[in-house]
Image 1: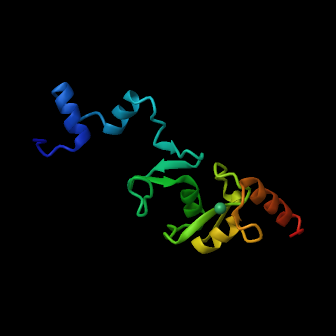
Image 2 (image 1 turned 90 degrees about the vertical axis):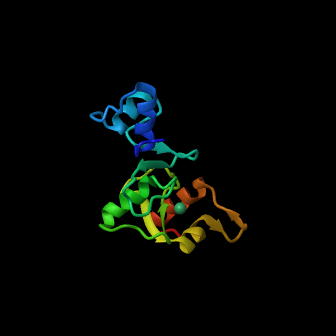
Image 3 (image 1 turned 180 degrees about the vertical axis):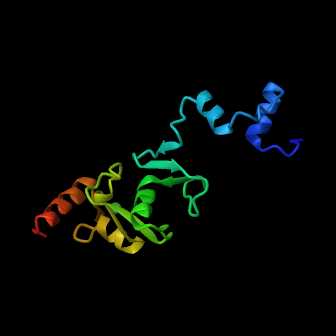
Length: 139
Ligand SMILES: [Zn+2]
């Protein structure tokens, strides 16, 4: 029986005999959990996720949104569609500065990463080199 309590509050009730309704769950959770970083998490490849439970298109676990998507949504002033991808121009997926980001379609994005001469996915280093060349008009 949870008495209509959500899970975090139920656990609190069970452990301490009091829901401590005056203490927000997030705050409590943050202090107790050493991995808590203010609603930020990192994917194994370095991509940063932001805890965004109210976002209309949450990705990971329905609670987190990739930071670069949030950055571009702020720049564009609208939410990105699911079929829109964000490309990192310098190949560094942890570099979420707006100037390093390009909103593109999922299909076009795959093309940016796929080398049709070698039939292989390009490395980040290759993407970085191509971006540098594009900047100098050498492509
Ligand atoms: Zn990309």
